Length: 284
Image (spheres, rainbow, N blue to C red):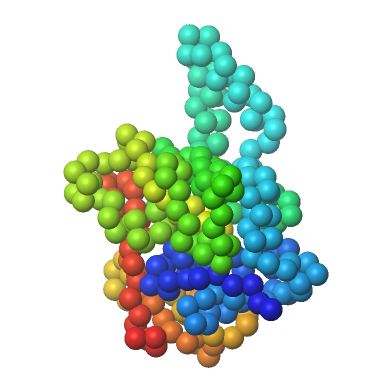
């Protein structure tokens, strides 16, 4: 039996979250293949290594999340922070600023059992960084860590693993805004003020946010001819992550069953969000 999650394909965050699930499944059970069928994303893999979606999600919950800073750098940052402003020399202050920037911007590492290095947001050569939705003063590790904490099981509240992309958490922290259901309603004009500087958080769907962040490492939409428009294709037969990523980016059309197009919008001068997508081929 295949592993399954419910998916709304006009939400690009949910699509890339499914891509993230396939990436992680293949790391737990090499040879895993995934496809879209009947409002679901399905994964076929060796059941001796990965038997259920719940098992896959639990592995994500349990794995460590860090960045590429060394233990020495992190210890030094803690030491400098503990000194306080009055206790730091000018040189120490500059050192702390440099280390703080590293903590804010360094690539993310999902530890064992996935051992996945995530740095697509630093890619200015192939255009990966155009999907970076957060500003320079926001720490990618802080956002990812908040979303990971938000997916911790809540005592007394059980959500079916198959509906994980619908599960929401109130006060889970500021998300990446890959979830287009919230991304389309969070401009300062919409709410009357900008929530980000005030650190106001509302309901978020952390599985979408964290898994889409993972998925974008390999799976990238292609740039459309129209400015600030991006396309991704879905497929209807089992494909490995390598081949599925090529289909997603509209590079291999033979397996594609439909294509969707979406855009990003600035929530203010610095922060972006994903907007809902529209089918441009198939699935109309």
